[in-house]
Image 1 (cartoon, rainbow, N blue to C red):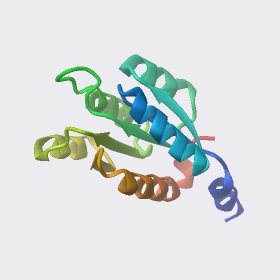
Image 2 (cartoon, one colour):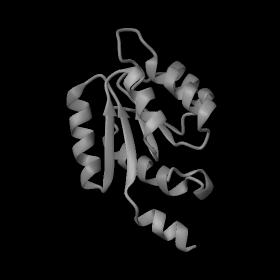
Image 3 (cartoon, helix red, strand yellow):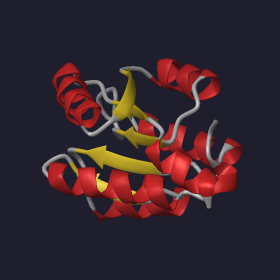
Image 4 (cartoon, rainbow, N blue to C red):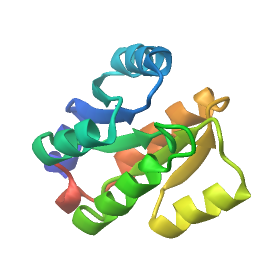
Length: 138
C-alpha cells in the first residue's frame, strides 16, 4: 500500500512523439503543469532511444511523422514487444476507423484525435494510475 501511495506522489514521465513542434510545446507545457516530467521526440529513432534509456510511465504517439507514414504505429508495435504494460495513447489528426482498429489491434490503450485535448489529459491520468505496480518504471 505504501509503495503505491509513494508512486502516486512521484513524478510521472511522459513521452510525446509528434512531428509538430507546436503540438509538442503545448502538450509539454500542459502536462508539466500537471506534474509530469515530459520528454519529447520528433523522429522515430529519437523516440526509440528515449524509450530504451528513460523510465517512461506513459507514451503519447502521433501516427504519422512523415507524409503517409505510420511511424507511431510501428513504435507502438515495438513497445508492446518489449513493455506490454506501458500505457500508450495514439493522438493524431488523422484518426479514422481503419487507423483506430489497427492501433487497438496493436495494443493502444486509447486512440484520440488531436481535437480531443481535454480527453487526452483525462486518459493519460487514468492510464498512469491504472498501470500495475510491478510493471512501473523505477
